[in-house]
Length: 75
Image (cartoon, rainbow, N blue to C red; front, side):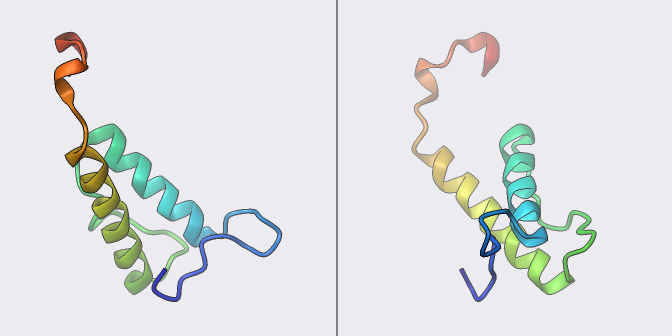
């Protein structure tokens, strides 16, 4: 993943892995891009890459979603 290690050798997320997960959750919950959000504890260049990865994952996942099966009350 672009030279970034999201999981420590003992199978706990590193700060970068935690930030990637948070960026994915932000996109999934809000529908907005995480690009440009605050990134405490993660260097700016790496945070930008992680934010872009999270947004790309969100867009890919949602391009395959058939919202016609989702009740209109929660769309």
